[in-house]
Image (cartoon, rainbow, N blue to C red):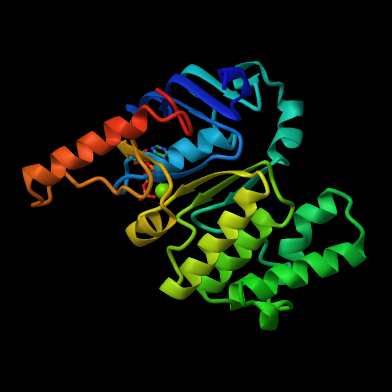
Length: 261
Ligand SMILES: Nc1ncnc2c1ncn2[C@@H]1O[C@H](COP(=O)(O)OP(=O)(O)OP(=O)(O)O)[C@@H](O)[C@H]1O
Ligand SMILES: [Mg+2]
């Protein structure tokens, strides 16, 4: 596939906040349409910062980034809302609207898209049942637990079947059973053609999903193959394990699907 067909393309992208140091350096990768990546790395590695670039909350301070084939440096402010409507986002801090009910928070993207209320009711109720929130449809977010709010945020992000879905630590507040269920939901959306990037510390979910990983280390990107959670430099795993991981990474880097360097 040529780079022009990528949903996302980064070439030597760097990001700094204000006059601070670069928190992302020389980031180059592409996301093929319909791909599913995890974004992993320790706290402070730059996962949320990379997602902020991906959903156009910030622009790169250097390098080239394109989204849906458009160079983001050439985008006018007035073009951003239409592009953002093609993206579903689960924020690390949820960002639900506190004065709206669970139902209305989730319905929002469909209302913006002008979908009929009868359709909205059907879709929202079905999705809220899937994430086990059918008994909380009228509740306001501040009265929900962290894990319940997280599921509302996920439902809102996926309800309109976005072309691109970014989720920042979407299972940080839920138990293993719900985490598995949410992974299933992301899988189903991916089967319908949505390109997905999930930033997470949840190693068990990464292994279960068996998908490629982008790993950030100190603001730089390392690519890992399906289901592979890289061994930390600081852990006590043997050299044999390390070599096996390195060989697997090399093999998978040669595979055509997923991001390329
Ligand atoms: N608004 C900001 N202004 C200045 N520096 C920032 C800002 N946001 C993040 N940073 C810095 O950028 C670096 C990467 O932070 P980021 O939030 O992207 O990490 P992360 O990988 O998402 O971490 P976590 O797993 O804890 O969510 C950190 O050094 C952080 O201090
Ligand atoms: Mg983060």
